[in-house]
Length: 122
Picture 1 (cartoon, rainbow, N blue to C red):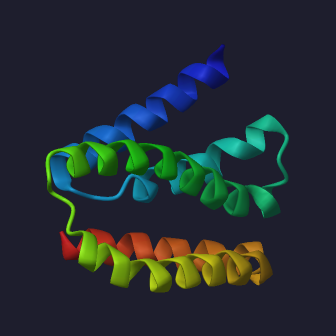
Picture 2: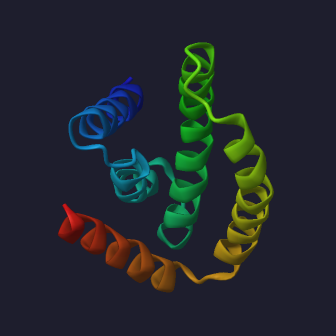
């Protein structure tokens, strides 16, 4: 029960911050999951990898729903989408392969640096 409430709170905070500030939900979800997952038995050295993967899976669901709503309202530029898609697929597939090879501590530094950079941009 506590695990469910924790995950719902993480999701709510991520959604609120995305709605208020336009930040990606992953900016909230990845660090929060990385801190929480070891309490569920996931090795601390694997927690960040699991957090990234879980965040991407959750974002894909919400992005699909949002994209469909925008499409129905005529807001999607289909020619631009067609040109973006090959690069997005190659980049996301390549990123998934690369992240699996990055040791946990190095990935932690990368994610932390990205969070600081994103905060600085606001």
